[in-house]
Structure formats: structure tokens, C-alpha cells
Length: 458
Image (cartoon, rainbow, N blue to C red):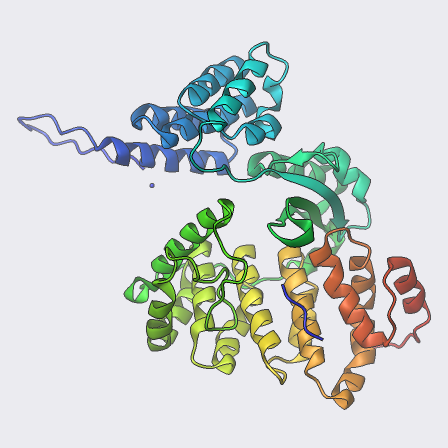
């Protein structure tokens, strides 16, 4: 069985004969935008709106200016300043902002819908769209909502708190969703609540979005067991981590524009999105040549770097170790990294590496433990990883693991089999089939099967 899947710095010099030259406008705009992003992440919407607006003022005419004004409108709206939000939103569309669907369904702008000028703003954005030279990032339709991990919060409660409607377009808002997560944690006594959104860009589900709220009840807080937060800043060897970041940015832009060939591949088990496009072709030869020379330094980045995004990129680069066994050996200790993004990347590479193998590369207990991690991004990859691992066991070894895995994971897998998001449901069903020898598909059938299994202690 194989299944595809920065701050303003002002120098003040006493007795200086000349005033300092003004900062480069583009650099100033970028700096202000970075400050705005920090405020946004902290839910400081007053400062966020002020900084994004200042960034737009500092930027020259063009899409960056329009985008900064648009982001300022969202923050002003979330701060309760609807008139100010509408004023700066007008400047965004007058400056060329054209992503009309995003604007219309943006949760951050919901408070503006009742204002008289709203319809004209949307119409002007659509007029801009008709003149755009490249398409905006697509808006996706919500096809399903899942609630997972809590005995107190069900799917309908999550839908009501989020205010989303299945069948309608949905736009991700980190700030709004963070507020909703906090509301759920407080109201239902949760140790953890985090929303994830899965977007499908291809095949039958192209244009579909699924939302899952992962939760941990307060009494189950022991599940939130991770490695300590790293505090260091090791050297990026030959700038490889930065180069991977550049690759990701180009890849994501091409993907959003629909310019990425679906059959684009790479020369290792996992490379995120391939290198087939001309803008990407130069990256992989560099990774193939340099990563094997810097395995220790890249592992040090993964182990010691305080910035989670940097660690996550190092995890992807370690897929270019000279052997699958070396990749697994270096990534396995970081399955419980404190950053969800790092865990996601570690498990992605491990999953693809085991998929390409013909013998087990990890022990079953390590992978089973990963299936119990709290986030969807952890759990679905760990469960796919388990399917590939079980597939590579001998029949005798699989038989020896069966009872223990049913006891440890059976209830969790059956719960996952009831989820609406395919990439969360499907791997659970695959593992259940491997362990049971049965071919059931529905959660009801799997619940009945689990109830028939002999109970053992220990």
C-alpha cells in the first residue's frame, strides 16, 4: 500500500553639523511593515493599523502600498475604528488593490459591511481585478469543519464560535482565529485550542478548504509535552537556510499563480514542491552539493536556533543528507520540537522518507507516540508515516505490534475516521485496515469493530 500525498533605529549625534539623511523610502516601508506584523501577532490592532498605514505612506505607488493600506484597514476594523478603516481601505483600492473575493469575505473587514460605502469599495476592487496582469491568490470554499481532541467541544460548537458556514468562501485570518481560540479555551476550560486550515490546490478537491479546531482539555494537559525552547543563534552554513527560505517564497508565489506543474519533482524523497519551473531550477543542485557538507551545522540550527521558522527550514534541508538513514537519524529527535511548524516539517520529511523506503527506518513506538500529538499538522503526517512503516514490516512483526497499537491508538484512530478533512480521516482509516484486516470505511463501522476487540490491561 502506497499513498501519495525589524525596529526603527534613529542615530542622534551631539554637535552634528548636518541633519541625518532620511532613510531609503522602500527600506522604511519594509521596516514599518515588519513592526505592523509584530503588532498584529500580538493582537495590538491600534499599533498595527498605525504602522501599516505609515508603511503605505512611505511606500511608492504600487501593489506594496495598496497592500499596506489594505492591512491597515483590517487592523483598524478589528480595533473598532470602522470609519478610519473604510477611509484607508478606499486608499487601498484607489491604489490598485484588486483581490475582490478576499476583500469581500475577509473576516477582519466584517464590521464594514453595513457601511454605505462598502458596495462601492467591492465594485472598485472588481474593476481593478479586470485590469490585473496576474491573478490573485484564490479564495477557497469551506467544505468541512472538524473538532478534535476535547470531550466537551463538538463540531457545531466550533462552527458557532467561529461564525463560519460550510459551502461559503472562507478567508484565513490569524488574528480573528486567535481570538476565537482564546474564547474556546476560556469558556470550555481547555489547555490548548488551535485552528488549522487545509487548502486543496489540485485534483477533485481543488478550491476546497477544511477547518479543524484541535483542542486539549485542561485535565489532559500532559499531552502538551515538548522539547525545551532553543535559545541560540548558530551560523547558517553557506546561507543554505536563507536560500531555502528564498525557494519557499518563490514556490508559494508560483503556486498561487497556478504556474507550478503538478508533476514537478526532485531528487530526494521530500522537497516541498519540486524544481521544475525555471525560477526554481537553480536551487536543487545547490542543495544536493552543499547540504551533505554541512550536516552537523544544519543539525545544530535545528537543535539550537531560537527562531522556529529557521529551524523549520533546516528540517527540510536535512532531506538532502546522503542517505535515508542519515536523514532519519538527524530528524527523529525533533519530532516533539516546541514549534508546530518545525514538527510539521520534521514529520513531512520522515513520512516521505519512509514512503520511499522498502524497510522500516523508525521504530513503531516513536511513530505511535507522534500520532498522539495535539495538532492536525502533527497527527496527519504521523499517521501516514505509520501506514508506510506498518507496510514495510514483515507479517510476523506486524502481528506482534497489532494488539499494542490497537490498545494505544485504537480509540484515537476511530475518532479520526469520523473527521471531514480527508488528509486527517484517510490515514486513520488506512491504519485501521492494516491492523484489523477489515475494509470498513465509516466511523460507525470502526466503532463497532473496536468494541469487539478484546480488552487487555497494561
